Image (cartoon, rainbow, N blue to C red; front, top):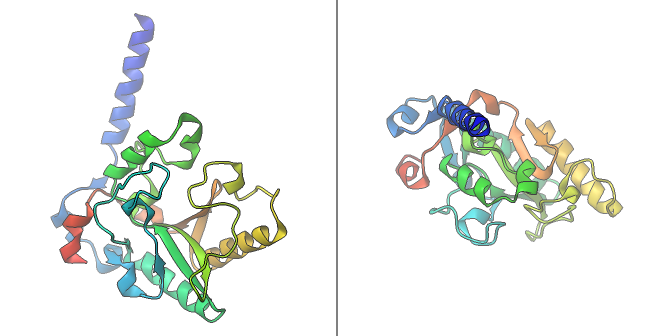
Length: 222
C-alpha cells in the first residue's frame, strides 16, 4: 500500500510539473507576440538552406511520419542567425542542411514515448519541454556545393556514444568537421547539446515560451 501511495505522489507531481509549464496553445495569444518572437518559414528567409525534414517522412528513428506538414519553422530571430550562417558558409563553398527545427509540443510526447529507456538522454522529457518546442533549436549539418553532406561522426539521430561531442574514437576528418560545425554555430549565436553533434540551440531559447501550435494552424500566418 505504501509503494502504491508513493507511486501516486510521483505521478501526481509529474503531471503537476507539466501542467505548470507555460505552453502557448491559442493562435490569438501567439499572434500578439512581437515579430522577432513569431515563427517564420526558414525557406522564405533563405531559400538556399537545404531542407530534409525527417519527421515529415518515415526516414527517422520512429520509422513513421510524425509531422503533417512539410514546413521548416523557427523564431524570426533564430532564422536570421541561420541566414547569416548560410551566407558565410556559401563563401566557403558550403551550406546548411536542416533536419528538424520547430516541433509542436504535442509531438514531443510522441517521440519520447518511442525512445527506448536507454535512449532517453537523447530526447527531452515532455514534462520540461524541448528547445525545439520553443522554435529555437535546429538539428542540422553542413553540405558542399552539390548538397552532399560532409563527413560527420554519425548519421542524424544516432543514439549512441559516437554522437556525443566528447567522443574521440573517430577518423581525424570527422573530428575536424564536427569541431568546425560546433565553432561555426557558436560564432553565430547557438549553443550545443553534448549528446548530439547535430543539435544547436539559439542561445536565447529560454526567452521563448513553449508552443503547441500545429503546422496547419500556423500555415496561413507564416
